[in-house]
Image (tube, rainbow, N blue to C red):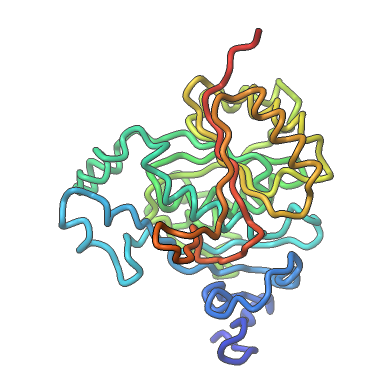
Length: 325
């Protein structure tokens, strides 16, 4: 049995009986949200995000779609557990901007999934499972948190990409969250057996989409061949002082097609890199829009795109690749 080591209304952390690693119940953090500092959970090995919900079923024309949802107001798309690795530095952690972007992009699925309305009005699971999946590319995926949220909840295939040193972590988290006896491609995978041994796995049974991981280095065109056709490109907290923001914008341009939609999340802490990135994105794309995680509705009531109500998180949405002169 797991041992709970924290009090109610605080982070609920358990200790795994075999590995003795810490596991955070992320919903316990969402229940209080008393702090938003970047390093709040760096000593946690496993982040248990609970059930990933697709709220879009409430929008389907068929009334039975709502009945198939659960108490959280959408359809159960399975659980998500993400491993963090402190030894990998910043790329090995789960960040607020990644969680917020995942929930934002899931809610915006009608914008980027061309078969959105057909998919959600057809409630036959067998038919839905064979529908063409939208290609989603994640840059700087790190742990894979954002991309795996989207893969669980939407009719998509998400390709997680990052530097070579992060590939093993991304692959482990993909397998960890798509570990199920009925998944024949993984049935003889040694990594699956290794993860099953530590019991910190979750099933792909309810997942709407699929995921994989690969190395993709920005500014290295040879790496771009793994993602030749991207309907959507996402990136969480990738506009940073560590990287050249102009080169990042150029990479997004090179990986985009005429109809590709781009969703980037960030935190208000790096003014100059964001200014340079914004200027270059406006030069390269017809539409570039900034959307805040916290906003007011038409009645002046405060709303949040994500259950994580971090006021410093915002999103950059871009589309309409311009032709080079």
